[in-house]
Image 1 (cartoon, rainbow, N blue to C red):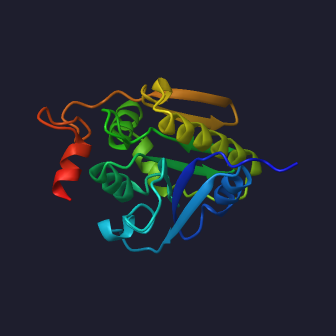
Image 2 (image 1 turned 120 degrees about the vertical axis):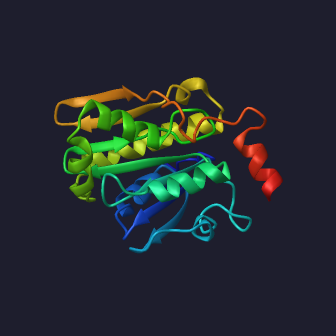
Length: 203
């Protein structure tokens, strides 16, 4: 039985190929995937054009797969400035994290980092040294499900993703942590224009 294409388009940015299992899982769902594997050096706006630019089809979401739990923030920031929705997906044995959606609505990855650090002072130290891997099929399948649902909600402009949250999967089960938009964070849109409007005028 042949599965029909979903019409979803996802760009996957990874550090040193850690997203290979996720890419295979998305492609098995007949999701169109553009990939870009980064090296050790920080990215640039030119790098972002590798997965979402004039020569590439418009994607519904850029999925950032860093090696460390605190990685990928530079790409998330570039996507935010370019008006491209993005989400960080990270996994290791029996543990997966996805979200929040970084878009033009308040509540971003930076807000999540600040909220988690305020909740647990040791979180930043732990996250900085925790690396992911691609050797847990259950976590990979969970991340693929979450990414597909996120891309579909963004494509359909669904209110499902409006409530910003971090999805977490551990040995104890799954949970959703609400991410409050932090006062003064750059993700708050300026009053005079939206982020997308500013990006179009800048282009």
